[in-house]
Image (tube, rainbow, N blue to C red; front, side):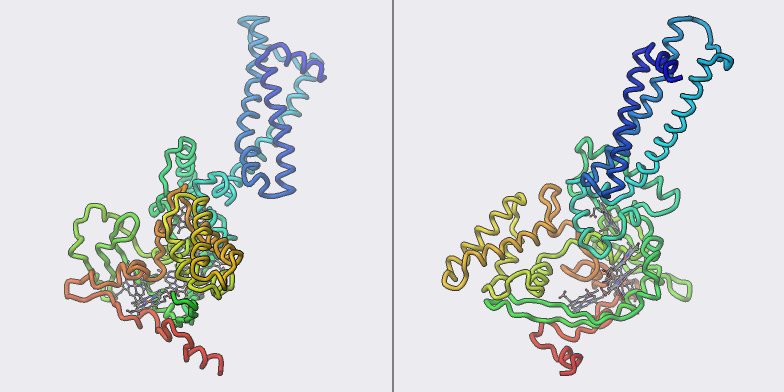
Length: 452
Ligand code: HEC
Ligand code: HEC
Ligand code: HEC
Ligand code: HEC
Ligand code: HEC
């Protein structure tokens, strides 16, 4: 039976190449499949890509070459005659059995490969790991954020055929630009291509569950010798803030949503109230129209690059950064903000400068070892947020969740936007939060709450 099959096969070099291609790629595929099932994420995402995206085309190519070769061999032998298939011949029956059995195997392999290929392309390891340096910043930030268990595609592709196709179409274009090295650095924020947040976010965050006010304590440190620990206490009026979700607020801005030229909200009586920044009107670049959704405030839910002062303060509060080092808050921040050309330069530069600072002023109290340890922590903070290779710096991707640098809420809640009757979108602090303490060493409110 097999003899007949192989005899037919070896009559043409095309079908020989085809069978080798198919057999080898199927073999490697099956081995990789087993390895991948046994240890997920093997090869840092590349394993899955080799197995499920790179091999199947060779497998299929081989499958196509085999019958092509057979047909050519036959034509050489008996030109101008269509093949006669006679099931009375034992040879034909044997061939048909082998071909039939192999077809079942092939359909199985191609089916598994397609399924695996699609789920590989959906995995965060593929998105973040495969396009390694390109999406490394987003991947790294995602891994540390509150959504590290939420797959990239939950927000970027989501369910539904339309978004699947749209996602794959942009994905393919992105892969091509990665392969050609023509992608933009840093990667622009995909305002147009994001799924409507109400579909993605609200799948997990029910609206009534986010309508509750919250008391928040912020640890802050002064830039003095003792790095004095201070606390800010806010009562966030989260319920009032989430009013926007029902408010159907529309706005016009630049692509990055940084500069808002116009804001409108429908009124209960059917009218519309509009606020304009007269100084900006007509700005040609300001042509993104949006109805506000979650990502106009929580724009970095998964890729929350931190601000340098927040990183240093958190490290001081947690003890990761030695708070007893004189001026470590001031010096640390200064070194993080320096424009280092690469990670290596940052690692070396931060260590050299910090050790020099303590050697010059505090040689008696601060050992080089302590300075070295602090420098290592500082570099870790730097490495989480700054990616020179992708031109991602501290300020590349602003976060709209508060009003740092008069951005975020203050893009609209600002005296620059005025309605026809002279009204402004409210800027009173208490509209958004009650500030119970601002950078105090011993806030009364915390004593009261702790019952002391
Ligand atoms: C919880 C939802 C969510 C998840 C999960 C998520 N993203 Fe994003 N991503 C966003 C949002 C929202 C933006 C737009 C940010 C903005 O407007 O500032 C974004 C922006 C991006 C950008 C554009 C550059 C930038 O930083 O603005 C890239 C690239 C990206 N994401 C890649 C990924 C990868 C890779 C993963 C998985 C490892 C992932 N995302 C997971 C919501 C998400
Ligand atoms: C698959 C479910 C899922 C999706 C989709 C999702 N989230 Fe979340 N989100 C979570 C979980 C779970 C947490 C809590 C993580 C924790 O507490 O560590 C969280 C945390 C958050 C927080 C922080 C809350 C806090 O306590 O400070 C915000 C803000 C948030 N999500 C906004 C969003 C936005 C905006 C989107 C859409 C772009 C989104 N989420 C999509 C599951 C999801
Ligand atoms: C106008 C800006 C804005 C919009 C729009 C917005 N949020 Fe918020 N959200 C805030 C602010 C401000 C807070 C309070 C800060 C905090 O608690 O971290 C907050 C808090 C949260 C929290 C934590 C509150 C808690 O009780 O755990 C979650 C989760 C959240 N928002 C999810 C969402 C989701 C989902 C959407 C879209 C359906 C959304 N937000 C739309 C500004 C906004
Ligand atoms: C795109 C513009 C825009 C942005 C960005 C924006 N807001 Fe608003 N906000 C509005 C408009 C418009 C109103 C309605 C003002 C009015 O009718 O007088 C409003 C009203 C409010 C109100 C009052 C709701 C009430 O009960 O009357 C709160 C609170 C609020 N915003 C908080 C925030 C916070 C916090 C942020 C940032 C996280 C933010 N807003 C970002 C446009 C914006
Ligand atoms: C439009 C809403 C809005 C207005 C108006 C507003 N804030 Fe805020 N503010 C926020 C939000 C949102 C945050 C972030 C809260 C969080 O992270 O939980 C914040 C955070 C802060 C913080 C904490 C900073 C930190 O990280 O240590 C301070 C201090 C503060 N605001 C002071 C003020 C003062 C003073 C005013 C009045 C001049 C004011 N804010 C007006 C929305 C507002």
